[in-house]
Amino acid sequence: MGLRRIAGAASRGEGLDGPMEYAFTTVDGCDGILMSGRCTYEDGNRFHDMLRDWDFAANPVVRLDLRFVTFIDSAAIGMMFILANRCREAGGHIVASGTPPHIVRALRRATLDRYIEFR
Image (cartoon, rainbow, N blue to C red; front, top):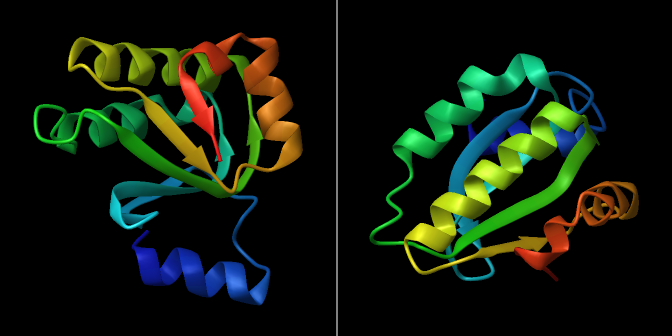
């Protein structure tokens, strides 16, 4: 799903409770990733595709726009740890913006707030 499709669906209040989607875009004025939908075990391949396509050497700080994420399960939390490790290895970290409160709570419960800067 492209950025326009994610944003269009969001503006109409539809399509946000489906599987995880992502689009590379500008987040807080820098290269980043917009994510939407339910982030679950079933999205593992898509998540790893996203990691493969991100240039960690050029962009070690990964800016995530999570405002359209509706759910995250333990497997997807594990995927966020993988992302955090890739960022750390490149000398960066994760900056998450627009994260819904229930998603922030889930990530904090897993102690991911050590690796994610919430804005």
